[in-house]
Image (cartoon, rainbow over all chains, first blue to last red; front, side, top):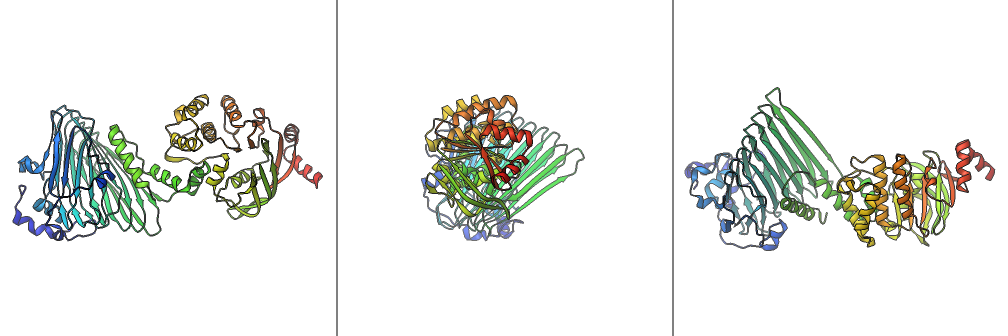
Length: 385
Length: 241
């Protein structure tokens, strides 16, 4: 247990989340054995031979590997941290049934702490893998970038094929003064998995939080709505997500950023590709409580007549100096563009794949290793469309 | 090389080509003249296989093979290449990515293409999204660079002389001559005739209302059009009839 009353939270195992398909979390609670499928890991860009500044591997509830090779950078497991005060400061365990289940039955998760002034460009690689059928995987991750530090985290989350499971990753980010966190997360689940990550971040003066989330494979249901608070002057958040809806996936994904100090800046950008019978709800919410600026951009690409995309942009301002803008479009691939590429000798299938990859491209500044991971994931996702 | 027989084509429910007959020999460079809307670009797009142009009758024979029903990529692989009058902007796809794919298929060295890009003064565009934010002249040069990566046997060149400033036209003209080697056949669409200063065409055809109405020596036809406009060609057509 992690600093919360167990008897109190048991009741919250039935508290619904306002968004997403409702799942009975009680079905997923017991879990046992441990298997690691390296091919599945490679699909989310996890390289078992990667020699980075730090790594963390968790299968179901067991921590397989962890550590840091850099002084001033700690990578440990949540359970060994031995400090219940550290968790649940940004996310409340009674937020909904998923947070309650995570608080009650969650195991592991990484804690990454970059000390003041420590800058690490190469990413820490974290892998969260679900192998046991009917299991709940609820790691609790904490990333702390102290003042003037910079840290990059690459997380790949995947599951054994044909394993029904519920993943509720709790992740809390603390970005100190003039610090920067680059966070790239790639998800590749299976048509039977339910996924409910709960994420929150606070960013202090001059700090930057850059998050890039990609879902590439089919999933039964996926709902997440990370919340970022920019609490110091000049703090910035960039939230990108690339969502590919395959088969019957029910997806509800968005980000919220609140501007709570002057000169703060939020960008929420999403690319949503709906295939097969998938349903995607793409949310973006910027709340201005101070003189900051924010922009949201939701783009949807329909690749099927049986799929569905809903974009839900919200701009809320309670400060007269704030500037918030929003852009959204849902459309299809343009036949004119496909023809153009084929007229240069490109096969039609390859032309479509090039255009889809192009649609997914979001230009943001990131360390080159992370950019490569993103390229890899989007190329994988565009294959076989 | 190319034989077009009695070609009638519809686009957006309108007849855009109305019984076109045209034969192009190996290595022949043809000027295709005509006012706006006369069917020049439609003919080029139909030869390339643009699915928006529906052939309702007639046929296109390329090197003895009927290509009328073939896909654009099959035609490209057989050796037909096109420079678009107005190419689309393609977000997220870098010009260099497309060039690498196109040149790769033909085994053309990418270093050579980079040198050509330098000659055309468009090296800075290679890492940019195709045609996004390009000027009119830059688009034509990018198209030309793609054609240099493709090395077609039949080059369809649509209005490469419009929207290009005089200085750029010098670079375009000399690169164009690298594409148009003696054994390469080409159709050069122009409504100004400007391109004829850079390319030695063997013959000129004039299109009006979806038909080819006259043909002859490029210089004398251009001269005639400059003096009398395309109306002169109508009279010429009457003379033929």
